[in-house]
Image (tube, rainbow, N blue to C red; front, top):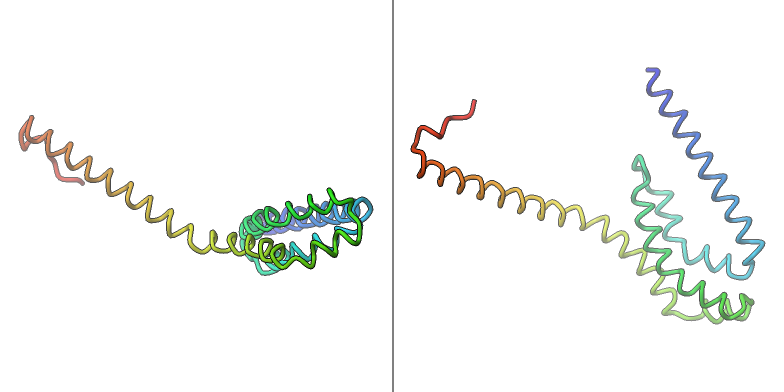
Length: 156
């Protein structure tokens, strides 16, 4: 009973700390990059949704989607900053349909990784295990050939 209350205190403390960090970073971005901050939030909407729907313990789905989503948003943010971070630059980039396609598609790739990668990893690990079993059986056969049937014992 004490352990569960301890975990909830750690979880709420971690949640509070991450909320404070997010708030601080948001305020800094608003002050420094006021024109591009709204574009950044709009581009990162899939990550915000992933954060809201992710119920895993460590929020791993959110981390994966946010990483891919950020990879899609970052080039356009750099483009905005290279253009001077003006309202006109934000409007030009925001009117580019391909920019939105790339940003949201990268978040979609993150979700595809979450959906398909566990199956791929399972298949690879199963194949490796089967290969190891066949190698051990071959080695066992070779030992029986060399030393005789007395080498082979039944497992307990």
